[in-house]
Length: 296
Image (cartoon, helix red, strand yellow):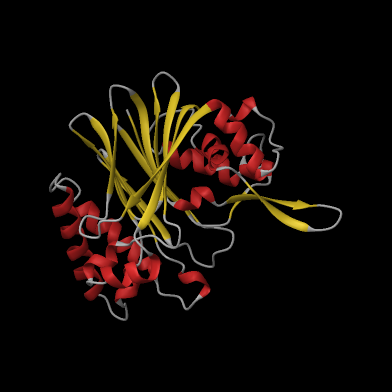
């Protein structure tokens, strides 16, 4: 197994509030809340604290309830030991990818993207979305579950794509509008969507990908859904949204698998002006992006 991770600042953010780390058969990411343009709540610190707490406990237990509780308690302890940090800094998602009982196992609290590439070339990709705002572990830590429900409601969705994810070379970088692009993807990949009622006592989702069937599995913050391309029309300037599947087919197009393979891909796809890169395509990520991958 080779694990890797990285985080990349969004074009609209002054500070990167995502964080990512990895180790022996695990990868962990966290997406700190940007507070909707309000005062900065230092969720970049909170994302780091949650990742480090989860890393300390990553193989302590496979019981999800116990794991969630222990990570929350440890993150709160770490936060309390540092000066001038307040509970709001822990307003951040948590996604943990581990190898458990022969499966890539993804544990998620909040929104984001989870998926894997099968050895037969097909992909399974889950989009976890909250209509008004994600549930954060912070609400469990400080007993704010009802406050969340009153403000944001108790529903969320998981959309799932399954099928062949075309390689970047199969389509030109110039794309039609977003809705047409989604419809085009639906011709290649089966899509299903299910609505769930949030259980605040167990607010996590888990996804499994058998190691003997999958080349790799990944976790990404919802920043993976924030890519856009600036457009200038005769009458206006606007940003054209890029379908998350198009973003994934570029970002996850790993060629050489070796230590730091995802960081090497990040260096190429985000930083270089070459055929197929984000710079050449004129794509930008508006939100911070964090990625964790384990490759078999």
